[in-house]
Image (tube, rainbow, N blue to C red; front, side, top):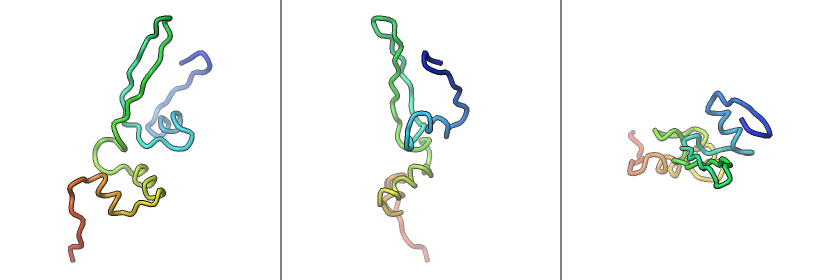
Length: 88
């Protein structure tokens, strides 16, 4: 609710769409509320990385692929320290 408009965000994808014109890498963030000396409220969003904080984020992986990263780069980003090898 604000002075210019009011809307309700009900789902995670709606959060991403409300906060970014293109795409928000993740809705995994915390919000810090501030009050200025003249009583105005401001908010700072602190990102906690891509995805939900557990495993691979499909949207984050898709963006990385769009940026030219290959599947090995993407998997190593999300599963640091893991070995990627063929089993057969």
